[in-house]
Image (cartoon, rainbow, N blue to C red; front, side, top):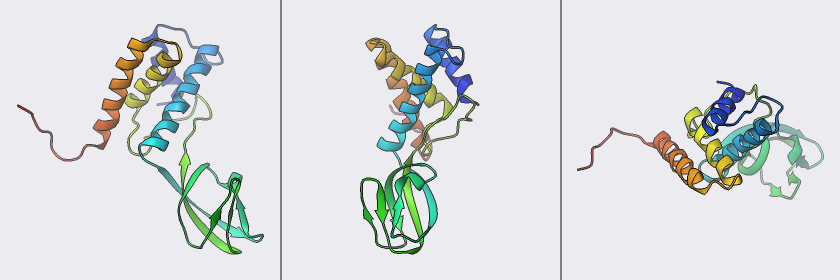
Length: 163
């Protein structure tokens, strides 16, 4: 499913119009990015690996293909600075956590960090929108559903009935 379709579903549930390029669409789009960032930063890292041919003893963090969050592992010793990694010259492989981000409504939704399904993202968007709109009762209800769906994605084993 494309993000723009999920945003339309959210708009329908909220009872608002949100055609693409409208202010409401932009707000819901930003809500979607807040949700994926929240999941990646607070629940489980999204991880990527990239190799660099270093010639000046540093890797600029803007050179990473995805929005750099932190180093998970590196094949050489390194020092992390605000805008760069200081590393020895040569081939350097960095495994890093990143912050996922939607860039357009045409992005296809994929599971984020093994947790964020389309349904969870939908309720996350609804919760964020309700929160910024001051709809506290709705925000609580949507956020509970969002968290339930995040938790359901991480369960393993067979279901149990509690008596």
